[in-house]
Image (cartoon, rainbow, N blue to C red; front, top):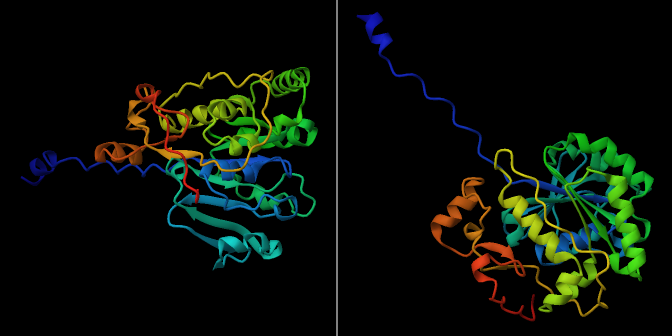
Length: 320
């Protein structure tokens, strides 16, 4: 009787899969290549200092949540800090800054703003220790010194450790004044990096921030194609064998407009994620839950779902 009972006992349930976490994107490159400016662009606000004299920060890990900041010390201690005091963080005793913001972009991913790879005031171990936590990299290279040997050497060392495709941004592209110079730099970088990056985008971060509601200025800055590519990548992150996006980056011959007054909010609520033909509602649990609630979805303010192309976002308020 005991034997028969054992034969008909239900099989044990398989262990529940580990909950999916959001992708972690590291912003990397040389000192003053525009990493912190890119962070501010993506989150639609300016939590990080971008002045040349104030950008020597340890890694800044930014997640979605109520606004707040905390210092993780080299001894493992945690100390709350005000956002306005970030440029006074003691480098000698701080291993990491944990920052939470209510930015819509952070619903899709965590951002890790890394120090410059060749900053003489900061040992490489400061950012190398975080690499095991990184899924993908957005590498920023300054257009006037694009893809230096130091960058190529570091990328060769770390790229094999990454699990997902990475992206290269040629920043400060407006500093190249002629179409010939822009074409030359873009072609050289694409040739030297080969297939090391999933996509290469020339970009003027300052003009993207200054574009406001000027759609042509936003597209000319190079941000339009990059943001659309990035959102597509994140929405399809967990798809098995996801294809590499084949979006065409902005052409180098496009004239870049002069800087305008800084007044841009980068992301806007209103586009519907699940209306994208490539979106997978099961790719990330948080996206599926959002779809069930029929609430507003996160989309770049200038990248609308196909059915809403004709709609323009509301202009930012004076406080944005």
